[in-house]
Length: 251
Image: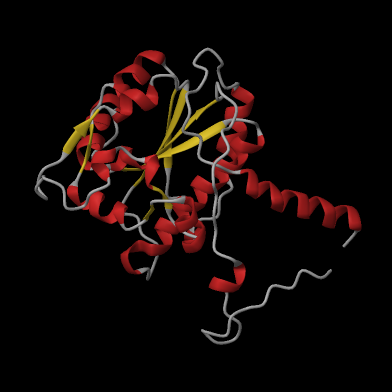
């Protein structure tokens, strides 16, 4: 392998470190070009999927009227989400660094930070999340799948779900390489939200929404924030579980 090829591969790998979730407002007047959109869709097209099922469809929404309608769809936050989300939180940067996983609690509204709050498990907290998130968004890609199509012999269609994740990652990395901000919108698959979106977008009853990608050009420069990951030696095991891998940084 030539040194040029090795260098290019190493550079491409470290481009992965530039991937981030863009939660800031987008410039609604700056559209994503057809060429860039096609590049993102080509990345989805070539994503690895189990048995080459290609178990996805996408709906591209760039009509401002439809985006506005989607923005008025209300989403809900369940008590189950509050409890499970709480387990992933750190309440200081030191705690987050020590854990190496999860996110800071200040990313969420105060009412989400008490799993024993004064609401019952059956009570959903309705909020205008989609409106605030979609207001400045020039384009959304909604990924659909057919739960009747399954990877053979895959319990719970685990391999099919992995495939949808590969599609997500390919589009995300392609968009980031083009300087386009991305935020994954898992709320689109929440049952009541999905039901409303189904009517707006004409999604057939046999298809489900997996997630959506909110795309655009951020108005503000990226704000520095703490990013943590476990070290390679903490999750990689060599030959036997528990025999932790020692990273080799030599050439």
